Length: 423
Ligand SMILES: C=C(O[C@@H]1C=C(C(=O)O)C=C[C@H]1O)C(=O)O
Figure 1: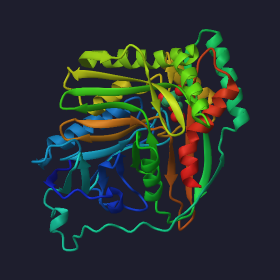
Figure 2 (figure 1 turned 30 degrees about the vertical axis):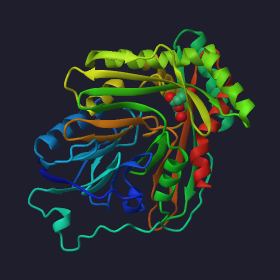
Figure 3 (figure 1 turned 135 degrees about the horizontal axis):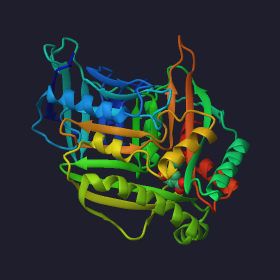
């Protein structure tokens, strides 16, 4: 049976710290430079869950279910900003064959902020009171819980194992089977039961302001890379590929960025990623434009080669339709895509789950912002007060000129935001 939702958005004094209103143990958030959207409390009037094993249609099933939900929703949204009205927060698995499920969650209360304007959205099934009309309705910040620290160590893929996988990938590249493949490794550990996960979200968004910080169903991270954003017919995407760690002082830093900007290995790796995005996007848009040369994106821990792409939507698709068309890009899978995904299945001894999958939000008009879930970890609560399990992931693009040890070091630098924040 179709869920029918009633949705009401109202202008609201912008709150300083959106996260202070989120659920400590399962925050639902999308933040960048203090702007964004956060679920207040943990009410969920609708959740679309695509279970593992649904086959290669995961994003299509979700996009269709979302269309159905929005078609039956009664939305009153005089504010009309990105993230107002009916919103679902989503996280999808990287691989269609993953054992993890993909989710799109509609919370009952959302607080948002965009360029100095604030709003509140309340959502309930038709026939039930909107949250503000319920007897115990309150909107109070939750004080942050005590500081906590976790431990993570090698996961299913050891550092040595990672280098052997890179060597195996180089052989496949040498034989012409693939041009590029992105190989990841995992770190596993625990954090204490009851930890206030908002502390991690806050540390990531404060420390890495140029990233999109997300928390969706236990997947928490700060990604520098968008998969696609759609806003009133305009489409944008940011492609990243080609990476070098920051230098220890100004001279080393300048040398590192100059090295990256002129490295043919990194420029090739980047070009694979740009071409794959342009090819997948082309059938859905017109007036596609991207810069000729990548620019250098500077993050606190590393530099990336980056290209921004802009276009106009031409087929009326939603942000989730585009997610389905674009994922997985060569930035996180490789080229050609099917052979790269097959190589990942063979060379990585773990299931990526939602790492390197699409994470973001979609609204009732099909607008939305989706990142690639990088620099992230999946948190899974234990039973009966047991510790919370954490698995973090980081990968690197392997091309013909890659060196196993350098790629291992690159994954170490990419783990740093998360590992530092957990310590
Ligand atoms: C795979 C990751 O990052 C991707 C790979 C990059 C590279 O190989 O240079 C750069 C940015 C991302 O597209 C990761 O962070 O885990």
